[in-house]
Length: 113
Image 1: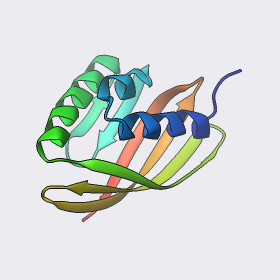
Image 2: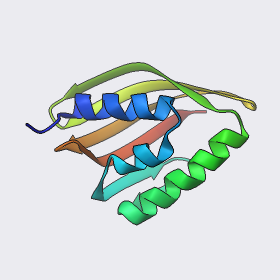
Image 3: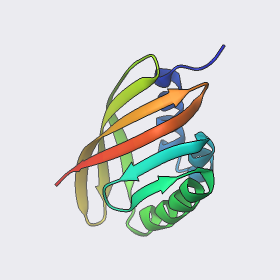
Image 4: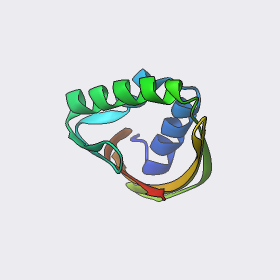
């Protein structure tokens, strides 16, 4: 049975909270698209792997931790509210996601500025 978006994104957040960025990147489909407001758009597994490699190093440098505030989903679509604490200050934001067969196919973050 294929995982729905809620199950897939719950796994994403649990994995991210552990700081296991390689495992986070492995959750994405080969043809996935990631849109990040700070880093840009990444299409395809290789580009997404590179993005998460960069993010993991930069998040470690600024002591970033993320906290999921709320997560909801309906079928293949999920959305989340999150908070991040860093050495440089706190951020809040929201994510929009699409997942199919246990893999994330679309990920778009929004940051409250």
